[in-house]
Length: 448
Image 1 (cartoon, one colour):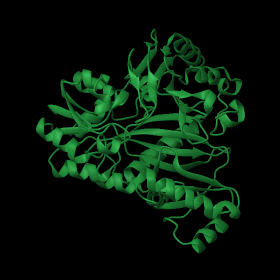
Image 2 (cartoon, helix red, strand yellow; image 1 turned 45 degrees about the vertical axis):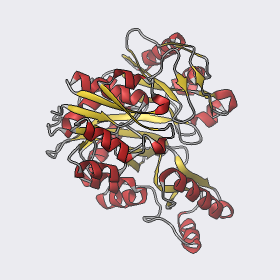
Image 3 (cartoon, one colour; image 1 turned 30 degrees about the vertical axis):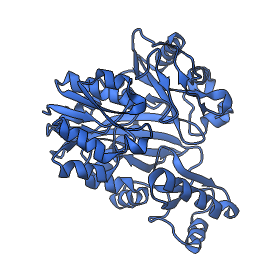
Image 4 (cartoon, one colour; image 1 turned 135 degrees about the vertical axis):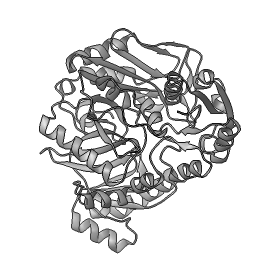
């Protein structure tokens, strides 16, 4: 087992990883930008290192500074968390070259799944159903127009190296196609460093369902069942997740799980990962992408399966076998609400400022993963996620009621947050019946 791990991230996920390290008897080294000098993860770590100015590209994306911190402190592993460098194959390779274990998948798996067009091709060859689309990035105007004519409208223009809902444009006609490709390329270049985009047929009002998988270095692959992630904004940003997915049906649930394991085996996957699917209105699943990292919504799976995915990541990276030889039994129902520093009355605009009061929720079946505290300064440098409130109940009805109670208990003053918006979602009749798809907010909330 490792003796010292550097946590190459910030906010609630850094806190989450540090806690896992301490429970395993491992020292945790935190890195931080000048803006995060008083951050909770810095206070909780055994040692901490400033790696640069507030801008992420000069700190949390500064590979030389991060590697120097790891080597100076004698770290034998680095956990990248999520976002930033978590799916950066070059960073994983640098760790490997320096003799430091990257807690995540192999360089090869990250590379294969990081290019979404390539991932589609691999999955198609492996027999995993994919949405009709191009198998390579589209280049010249003629090939773009021909591909669009072959697939028909509506279709999606998507960044090849995309993620987090960025670099995507929905196109309904040939008149808007080339302009949409141009916009998607610009956004992809700014967000991911590559302007490559591909085309795929748009699935109308699908459900977004993902399957958590774990795999060790000994060839064992296991799924931890699925999560419903359909409640998302028009920018494909998730707001609320739950496990298990409501109204799914046992046959489809098992098929999604089997497809996810098959997909992981097809790329020789190791460590934690998520295989994401779109499920159309007829119950047909299509591979969307594979996230080669820990997901923001992993706690709902932990709550229903009684697992600790982060500790399992660390054990697998250290060479241990999976803790399970078959999928753990999922019990009850879990829901996660992402509480962001956003003003829902102003189009979900960021709401920076100082938190003058923070009271986290508690009580039976309630978990709050957060990095904030009274007096914490929310800046515009990073993602506006403040806290993840996760609840577990005997069934979905109890989980909904418990989440409503927990959110009403939670107090965050000094800035605007999405707490009240989540309460509106939980009270919505369609949501309460489990009738959700990716158009839920647009159709039933009217303002997201």
